[in-house]
Image 1 (cartoon, rainbow, N blue to C red):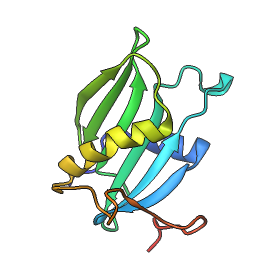
Image 2: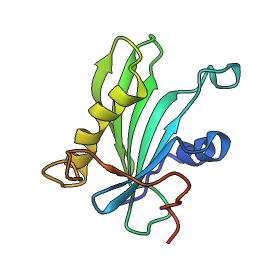
Image 3: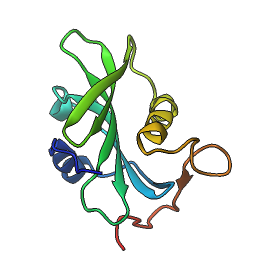
Length: 134
């Protein structure tokens, strides 16, 4: 899987940190939640799930909730240099709802028939454990 060409994930990761880290099948995933503050009021993304394959240092897949110029929220999928709109939402969903919508999209992009985990969800690592480090 090719790395994302959009490097804005790195800026967000450094400026706001991660909201959640979890395993997703053979992928490592991190969630970025951009707070609605004056410093981020013009930020394009509200939520991002970044998926790292194996020991890759850059994500190959991102599922995002981003705003458009008309005030709608778009659920988008990025892989390498491609980007597609998966859904348009009239209202801002909660992070939990975003994740419910995003994980099946990620499973499809990662070539998985169903969501990883025994309960149909991704397995979350315990707090403080950095799964991005080998």
